[in-house]
Image (tube, rainbow, N blue to C red; front, side):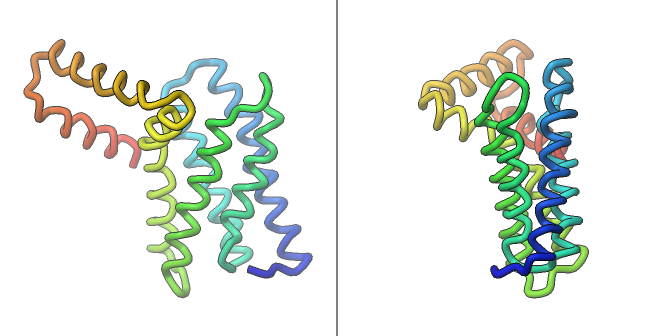
Length: 171
């Protein structure tokens, strides 16, 4: 994972692009309370990172881009927002794992990397909120799911259908 100066500059440009998009468009979408903002921002950001990986096809490039974007996300309106920073780093790390698993990543590897990174948005709230706010948040989410099942008169197995629908929505 050694980069020359030209590659570092290229990675920095793509990381800065992702970071600026996060700080500007991401902040605007969150202020406007647009649904699935995290999903949209992850898709845009990881697309930028994967294009950057095409320009610097070395292991670690995607994570480097994600780290720069997360660093720039610290300058968002309202101060340091840790959850999106964790999401950016995790998405870039997942994409990097997929790309590194392929010796010479081709189109399929990039599609799988982008898909896995975007699917992270489904898991992200549960892991980060449980980590930052304690196990109680997970219990609240499960209670909310149970209440929704009862409210709509669904079978308890419908929870899997709901989760599957959320996964399909994010793909």
